[in-house]
Image (cartoon, rainbow, N blue to C red; front, side):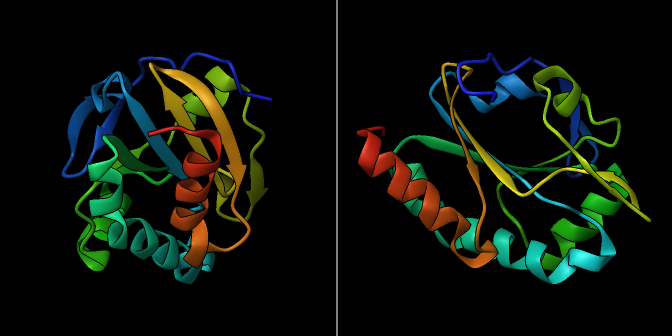
Length: 153
């Protein structure tokens, strides 16, 4: 369980290929949705990207910074950002540094090791919740519901 752990200040790559420290997401509320990134799950990934993009204003009004993160290479992720027209921060973690730092279990298939569909909610860089995504289309709604129920943002 990663709740209560501190998010490490990893330097990853954000689209379009620039270095980005995880703590640049801010000291307030942060939502990092982990997605698979493999060609096999492109439809589910797209649905999740759209879900967070559609509620971008809701998150912004709550003072919540959102980022997507996968094991994709920076080049693969840049193609994803262009294809899906994503405006929020997208982070490439092909070395699975966040998984190693937090002990996040991965799944492995013919495309290599990949992140599970989990959304991390943190405040002041401390993990407040790790929500298992049950529906890619409803992932962002699931986060908003958690925030309302917990009295967060």
